Length: 336
Image 1: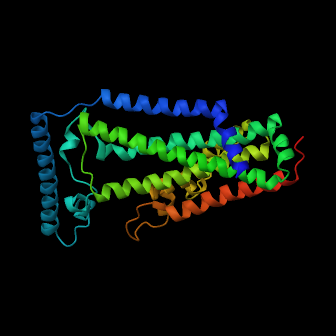
Image 2 (image 1 turned 90 degrees about the horizontal axis):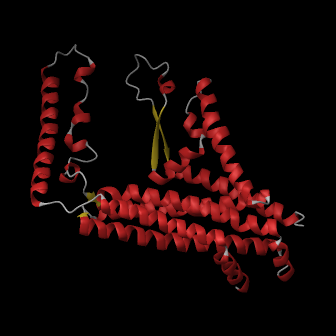
């Protein structure tokens, strides 16, 4: 317990960590101020006009659907043109969402409609925060010799490294939770006072909670990954260099090569695809090569999916492998 307390004090005392916290708060403040400045409480006339436009849009969708059904009914049995395709695509009941008055209120912040995109922004910033803090936390100690001094007091390498990693993950989790509550509460207040709260039903909160929970897991994985790579490279810059090299060599260069060789499902070889699939629950990717040879056999969409269990498994295997390698190397490495 004394070791964890000491590590927590060391972590909170680091200037880089303090700077990142300040930048985090500054980013939140700028986002909130920009949203507040660009929003206003809609007047009664604006609301009436928006309701009218939403009703007209819904009626237009219903009219289009009825016309499609009429064409299907009147077509000849031999007519197979795409013009008489299934009308399900224009069926209002099958749409993800119908037009609502908030869609016709430009310049009005709607919390229910914009909370999820704002939460994605928060998660992205926290992922960057966790990775950089995790890498610098162990990287600075390995470079300065702080780990050697710590081992003189507690000469158990794996225990010391585990305490550092556990302290890091615990501190990042607490900070992420506090930041999330403050962040969403701020925009909820903006929606109540200078915009619209929107429809805050159980489906909304469950969906937002699911995104938030997956985002916290990703933040912890990014923190552990930064910690592990910096441990393997013995320097903070090793983690930054590894991420930059991966992004340039594989996410950009590798993707280009896969397109040149006409590979199938190239997105499933990219880590960014699994990150997106984990956060959203499922990601769909288009690949025209999937429909090769299907001409005349029926309709082919050319899409394939990555779901969240597969994405989580990939992220856990990658992070676990790097962390295990970091502990194995740290156990035998000469630290001087």
